[in-house]
Amino acid sequence: MATQDGAQEMVVVFDASGSTVEVELGFDAFQALVARRETLCSHAASLVRAAYVQVAAGLAVRAVVFFQFRVDEEGRLDPTFNLPLEYMASNAGLGPDLGLGRIRMASRAQCPVPWHAINLWEPATVGDAHAAQLVQKAVWRNRLGLKPAPVTKVRRAAVASATQRRKPHEAVQELDEALGATAEIRVAEQQRFGSRLAVGGGGGVEGLQTSSGRTSRSRARGAAADRARGAAADRASVATDGGLTPPPEHLRSELQRQQQSYLDQIKACREEIQKLKSSLRHERERNRRLQQLLRGDV
Image 1 (cartoon, helix red, strand yellow):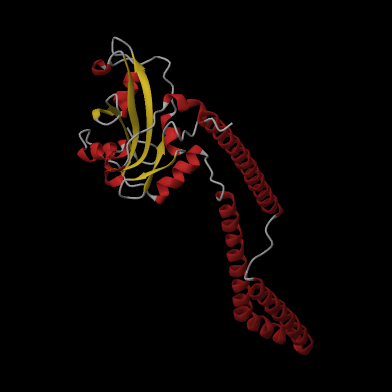
Image 2: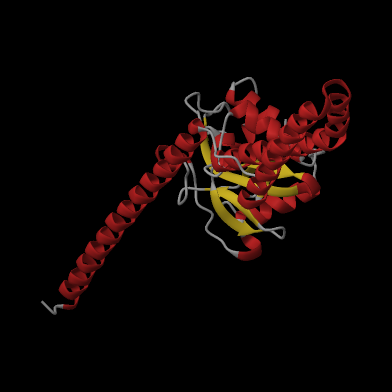
């Protein structure tokens, strides 16, 4: 089974210590376990440590969620199991570098959905013995025959449109693109106007000379001069302001709303950091006093 952007999905099951991969499952097979249509008799009556894995092109692991679930005596998965594995993988924090840059990793210590942290587990080892490294080695063995497709720019845009997930910078990018398109249209209009004046102006004046004489010719010349001056002024304006017209009111208000939203988010994050720092100082002071009591210094 694959995600919307072409990455392949699989689940690996570890031993009780989380140091060995014992079972590899396609995501369809794991969903059959969740639906209790299949059993996992090899891990009956136990708490199973597993990992949900997203595999990108080149069999490179791009995201891992280390989760756990219970299996009853008959090998059937706990019917209350309900983890949004794909969402957690897409919103996970950074994990170890497996050779192609740091992957996304969700575990008990860094869970993107805090109330699900109790259903995750934390790899205890580091280096080549880290559970993520074991997952990557299992993916390279490719016993499931995975064939992940490269994620193209067109597919990424289609997925973003389908899921309606916009990152914070996308609204600003849309505004830039809108302004750029407006500027190009205006420059094109000015060029077409200038070309029409250069090509058609002379013929129009000659016709007026023939039919109306010197007075009409003088008026035509005056009108042509006015048009030329107007076109020159417009071209100078375009050259001065870089071809940009003032952005529409709704775009300006959208940008201001986005900016205010980001500022509010930054403020909230700063306040949360200050609270965490205060709690950390309190805990350090408490630990220091407890150590003094243990040593008999107080």
